[in-house]
Image (cartoon, rainbow, N blue to C red; front, side, top):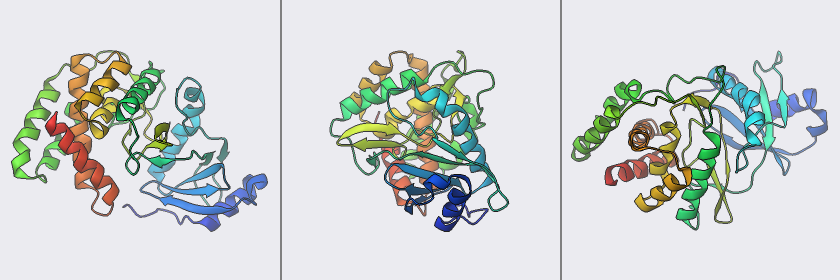
Length: 288
């Protein structure tokens, strides 16, 4: 995991709240996650604080602050649109957010009771999200792009998988890259829709979180979640609910699933959860 570029801690969170949002400063603060990009703390019973650990993460939080309030109203699942925004100070150089706390556990730790219903729910969510983005929407150099742009990393990742699987995976990749590219307008994308960014509460998908990679481009990027989570019949339920993925888009989505699975497999030596997501996704891609 990348090292923090600035020290982040519960004490820092308390100090920033006391300075900028004093009405929240008396709420209890405890670390919930200290990830690649952000320190996430519970703030009382109903809120979270997201504090970037790295400059690149600060840019991603700025995207959430700018766009999630605008997108949230049209989405059928809750998303963490900021309820407060923190400003840079001499003590901390970047903006930070206070967002709602959503109950539940991530799908990677708690599978939905009915995967067919879960697939349809995600399909409907993506159908609502994937609307044309404005010209000034964020652009991510690694998400929403033509698959060929991912080729160097995919080919490198394939060198780290079991040789018995490599040829089959390479054939899947070559078919996906050969599919017609997205020729529609750039659409809004979550950009990082995987089983650690989807919540389940009481057995049902209840929220989609972590929009730091929010971007615009080819919807196949997000539709890769069909292989990161579901078996073949359940993927079909997602595609029916989405109702506008042509065969080329669906083929590219499988290629994106392979590309993301390889990232998880090759960059998660210190994160068993993400490696597990990668292993399962890789198997689902090969089996489809």
